[in-house]
Image 1 (cartoon, rainbow, N blue to C red):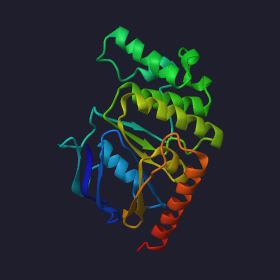
Image 2 (tube, one colour):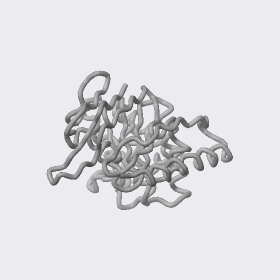
Image 3 (cartoon, rainbow, N blue to C red):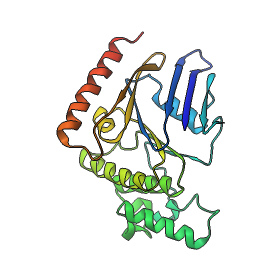
Length: 244
């Protein structure tokens, strides 16, 4: 279980980015973080990834404090951040040096097949579209089989059709090992499609406005997703009006 207990973050210049964030994320749950600009979504993700240090409170994974990068926690950024001198297959298998060569090859091939890039294994990142590069980044994150996967708006730069396609690839990979996923998104429709719950944050400082349970099963029907999206949008609007 991933737990946030009274997490706060104040920067050296006095800016209060987060205040009193407490939430428990169950094993295998997909939790979306949504909110307006300045509500600390990415800051909270960076704290969970061990890339920054909280000013107060704790973040724990199965009881272990997360205050530095952890091998059981993976992270996917907004940009793919692929290594241009490695092939697509080599990028996906980059973090698997501790595995035997046959197991590494097996995992990489399977992950590439799952995201529809098997025929591109020996190509270079520059030869792929933006959507294909992001598929590679998602495959790289899942292939290590992390306990927790943190996603920082990984689909924000993509067109609607490519984004929807990647949602399917993400859920397909998640269904195999069911890691806990924390997804930062500005898109309430994306949260409605992917998440089990959405934490709506209020800005300045970032704090929880409401935790919304998403009842629509995956894959959900369009009408149910639209209804959930409307509810989430209303909650987000209320959080912005209540800021301060």
